[in-house]
Length: 284
Ligand SMILES: Nc1nc(=O)c2c([nH]1)NC[C@@H]1CN(c3ccc(C(=O)N[C@@H](CCC(=O)O)C(=O)O)cc3)C=[N+]21
Image (cartoon, rainbow, N blue to C red; front, side, top):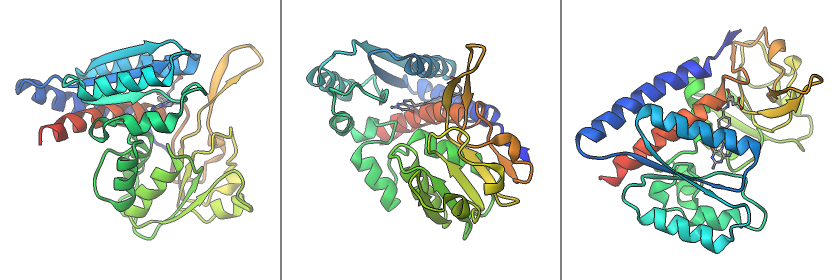
């Protein structure tokens, strides 16, 4: 089994992004990304810090908006409206999950589709499902780039997606379908899940269920992408990240992504690539 090195592939993508940012700077465009965080949970803090640090590394200007958890929806919508109209901001990301008193769908609907670097606005969702362009969600895009590193011809391959979220499961299924895979979307309530996964040439595990997928669920020669990241507190009090797949049982797979060091770094690299794409499209 070949481990797929998400950190290395993310680095290569970020190098390309940095070159594009530099080329835009030559013509007077400073690419800008706004990151909005409501309240503070430790995981979100880590991800937002990473997004800001990686932005700086490729030359993207980031605008961090940290708001109190109790911020009301109207104030958040007003901020998004201001960011929509700010010409220095090419991409807007509102960190999820949002506190319960805020209607996430209303927030996502407010982001201008051309600045929606997460690809969650209904216009971009519709564009993805009709294959008519638009900004593509970062994690699904990252999954496809990881698959591209080992698969040349997708046509007719059996792809099984585990997970039906709007953020990963549904959009990654669309992208695989676009490549002419035969796509089966499953989830935690699917009956006979292991048998269905056993038919797959490509498995994308995005259920958020630690070590759900066992080695004997995987057909020999299959390619496995593990999107799950669950933080687990070990006996010694330290935390570690666990994927949806028992990676050490995948000796017979063709290739697979580890956790950490697989999909996670790609998500951030794709966010930066999407931001440059948004800046470029805004000029056309
Ligand atoms: N609007 C929005 N867009 C997102 O894209 C978004 C979000 N909200 N909310 C939270 C999730 C999670 N997410 C990750 C990003 C990077 C890593 C990452 O870099 N992971 C490293 C390890 C990180 C660590 O050590 O904690 C890895 O897998 O190797 C993971 C997860 C983006 N998310």
